[in-house]
Image (cartoon, rainbow, N blue to C red; front, side):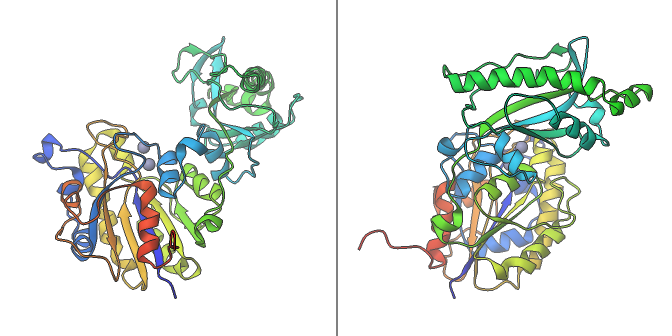
Length: 406
Ligand code: ZN
Ligand code: ZN
């Protein structure tokens, strides 16, 4: 039997030297005996997820790691969010990420409608009954979040947001970012949809009740992140790998789902700092026998990165490390341990700094690296690769690569 492949993606794990850590990165400062052991037993390197200096999103980063060219398939985040919450999509449809927000005298006063928790299903139902001149589907997600899908095939994805992204400002008018009729049409439809959402939601009993209780009404749909559903091709057809993903956040689930992967649901995997890492590891153990490839995203390290919290990042990395032994009985498998992008605590956002990478498995050319860190891995035998190379390298090791040429 050919060997299997497991890629663990520690979201946002890469970092920069931190003054308070005597110039170490959070990963270098963290106590990670298991990852250090894997470095010692494996081959190490660093990886530019998309290209050197290009700052990946979690969506474009995962696309690259799966071997897709994000510059070809990515026009915006909307379709991946839509897919991640289970919407059925056809290529060419245009999807938006949305929030339920609160608007008062034409000013957006709360972009999350008080982080509304209940009743968005009824509000979405009312929106879907809207008399509108193109086919659309609107679906609520967690709390104030939702997705809007314009199903008309004549529409283009290159339009600006109606969401002002800041409270105390009026709604923006969506405009086409390119001179093409298809995107101009989308902008017009979106502006009309937004006006109509205000009319419908303002009179909805749930909002009348919210006002009576002193809560901000969810009386506008704020849309952003327009993107066209891409024609991606399935991973299984392209690489011949039966594959599955475990991911806490809809965005990453959506990328994997559009790649045709199975999504393994793990109870307790939240995508937050409260996520149950052991349950995720057990999810791998329970499912790996059914697949050639599993991709597992652990969102945690990205969050303290955005918050500039180096201690929080260290703690979460140590929690990951201590649950890794759960995987140790998995045989005939090549493991990769890496990230989708750096989220340095000094930047409080993603950066283009390359990621540390270990590949561990039976026949790797073990190198001299003996600890898992941004700088130690840079001296390893894999050198510096790109995200789109990773799956090829792993498939080659697992004797699953096809010869190019005779
Ligand atoms: Zn990410
Ligand atoms: Zn992030």
